[in-house]
Amino acid sequence: MNRRAFLSNSSTSQGRSARSHKAGDRNAGSVLPGSARPAVEESRSFTETPSLEPYSGPWDKRAALHLLRRTIVAPSYDDLESALARSLDDLLDTLLADPGALPAPPRYVGEWMNADLIYWESGRVDVANTFFSELRRWWLMLMVNGGLSLRERMTLFWHNHFANNASLVVDARYMYQQNQLFRRHALGNFRELVRGVTLDKAMLEFLNGKGSKRDYTNENYARELQELFTIGIADNDGNPNYTQDDVVQAALALTGWDWIGLKGEVMSNFITGHDPVDKVVYGEAIKGNLEGGPELARLLDIIFAKEESARYVIRKLYRFFVYTDTTLTPVMPIDQEVEEKIIAPLAADFRAAEWDIVPVLRRLLRSRHFFDAGFVGGMIKSPVDLFAGLLRAMQVGPFQGERAEFGAHIVQERSMKLGQNLFHPPGVQGWQFHRSWIGTTTLPQRNRDTDDLLFGTETTIIDRLNPLISGPINRNGSFALDVLAFARQFPSFTDPRQLVADIALHLLGYPPSDALLLRLEREMVGDRGYEWNDITDDLRATKLRTMLRHLMRAPNFQLM
Image 1 (tube, rainbow, N blue to C red):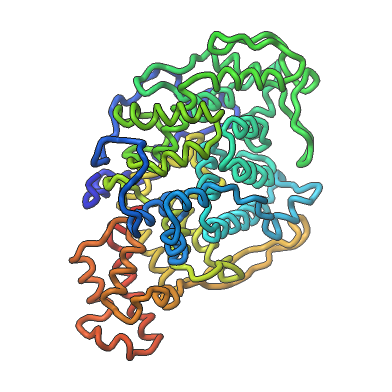
Image 2: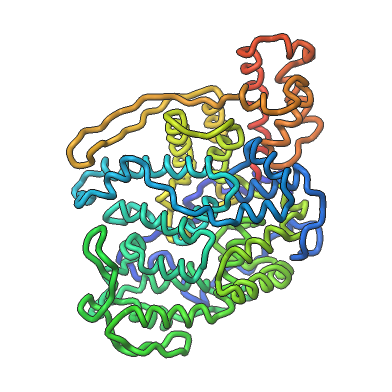
């Protein structure tokens, strides 16, 4: 990847590459197996032969920053210091460990989860909007405060892999339950997650599974289960992985799943509309049953017996954590050398581990290939990576209280404006990532938004204590990054030249050039660096903001 020219081939619209989904349309957003698709491989970025051999290079700031930028939204100064105090293996143990109990919901979401009835569909769009606004703030604060754990990063990955658009889910509370499902299985077993998603109320509404009965079979989920969630349209050579008849037969096996109310159990049987006829998927028989559970288990056995199911998911993980020069959803073949030397052996590991995700991630993130110099700063930040990452990278201590809420609210507003609205991916394929995030409109907007975080901006949070009775409760507040507290963390704080170099290394996705460092130093202190230790804190903060504004306009700042 030519980092100097990384904007040249960018798309101007995130939504342009995403397929739309319309409820009730059997073929919504889908491409039939065997249909035309690009036969172009990704451009190569790696500098040495791909290898899963353990990385044996230096464990220094550059290596640690690269790993942390790909596994958490961005490292704070304390994150980096903690990482460098450990070995690479110890750090991976920490990143991949199960963090334990799930976080409790925020206040108003918690109240609404306990309510017996909420009329989401009665025109109270404002109720759903305030619900999601708080839910996004909560999730963003989890990302910023998540410690050295991969859980929130993987929750975001699964949120995009099993993309749901909340606007098509009748009860918004189901989206909170789904988000916790992704978090619960974030570092768990992929097959168990697929089963959980299949029976998830938000997914059953979004892809019309709730309305799929023996008298009217809806194919939407059966199609996306194969095309997007497990096996993919075609293998890396373009050979189709399933047929239209496989979709029809799988849809019959998935009929009848239904429930009553928020707390009602999801079940499938003859009474709820399950079709008990015999089915055949991929040439394998599914014996008809009056209950849907045994047929679902058999369908998953058939899908997960296919080697391509493992390869498909590994390719998506590779593109998410290592490198992609195309959209995240793998509709294009991956480099053949990467396929043979990275994807295939990891897919074998995935199956051998019976679909546990941690062993695969550990081997990938520990590999020489992951730390290849060609991948450092080789990925464009999504809006969430950009803004939530900036908050975390410059945060000192816990991100909490009203300051955190207003900061997270500003981040979600800016992320939505740039095309990444959490809980509202643009289509069944999710966000496309990489070049689709940057364009002639979005790059200047990114600059304006980071200026707002640097110099301060105001916002309003709308709360509803009781979603059915009370009117809106407005909270007005502001947020600005504490640049002085951030800079004071560095031992070089009293040496402006070294301080600029240390901050640039910490915040830029690719090490800065000498020319850029010189420019940043001049922006902060000019030729009067000797005065730095004698000026007031207010003046230091002003000079730091001026320098950081220019740093955040460097192309390297858009990379991770």
